Amino acid sequence: MKIIRQLPEMQAYAEQQRALGKTLGFVPTMGALHEGHLSLIHRAKKENHQVIVSIFVNPTQFGVNEDFDQYPRNLEADSALAKEAGADVIFSPIASDMYPAHFSTRITMGTIAEGLCGKYRSGHFDGVAIVVNKLFHLVNPHRAYFGQKDAQQVQVIRQMVADLNMRVEIIACPIIREADGLAMSSRNAYLSEKERVSARLLNQALLKGCQYIKEGHENPQELHQMMKEFLESDPQIQIQYIEILHPTTLEPVSTLKTPLMIALAVFIGNTRLIDNTIID
Ligand SMILES: Nc1ncnc2c1ncn2[C@@H]1O[C@H](COP(=O)(O)OP(=O)(O)OP(=O)(O)O)[C@@H](O)[C@H]1O
Ligand SMILES: CC(C)(CO)[C@@H](O)C(=O)[O-]
Ligand code: BAL
Image 1: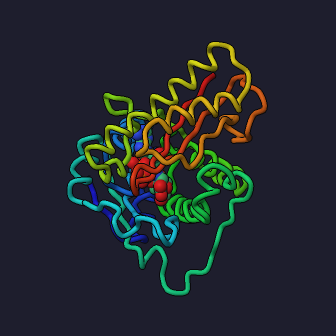
Image 2: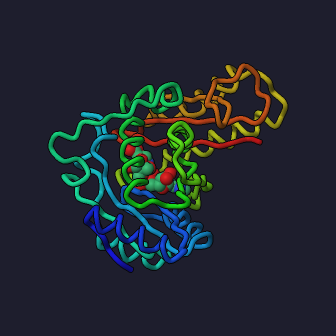
């Protein structure tokens, strides 16, 4: 497995592989790899000749009061995990190469980025869009793999790719969970033991929501209220949002007619966690 840090080297490698007729699968990450990331690498390995995993904690997608400085970084451990999962290249660019002085281009994502996390993390998806756009230009993949855990991110990237006629196939992969149902996330490492116990309620709330819909209830407000009361039963949990939406347009629904997505974001202490489920 190769580790590439220089931007021109990444572009030359991709060009060379393409000239040899190889297909390139790309898994963008911010590192601190866990089974969720590895599932994307495994899938990319099955569907492509070469798998490139980027590790870059992107400053432009963090708000001023967010955890950019604290975000876990361990290139050595990540490289070992990625290699074992089948990565051919780790691309770990340097921030000042990605964003040199006088970097000036911005992307504004519009409606798709306005609700859900976008409402509470102002500018977040514009930052995701600019970095993913740059990474796509550097890696030039045939396919790129994203986790459904970040459901709005998947739709934001699909929108950007469609709007800008980018020639890359976007593949959304299922959420990988811990044994007790908590969605794997690098930020789970911030939780204390007690907070980690509370974090189980996120998935439990989603399961209750699914059950409620399957029982034939029709009112989204009642579903919202039921889930809110369930989560608020734990004083450690502060709800940021619970939304019931169409899974691809992300528009709120007026009845519980499938397909639906229930998405939520909460704080447990200082840790912000998100989760969602789709009911087909
Ligand atoms: N549990 C998971 N199952 C499937 N994919 C996941 C999971 N967790 C993260 N991913 C995906 O891995 C990719 C890289 O995500 P990232 O590096 O931000 O990890 P993360 O664990 O989501 O971190 P964070 O805690 O910052 O949200 C994204 O496409 C993300 O959706
Ligand atoms: C897609 C991504 C790597 C862009 O920085 C990030 O938002 C993430 O890890 O989901
Ligand atoms: N996994 C999404 C990256 C972020 O929360 O900034």
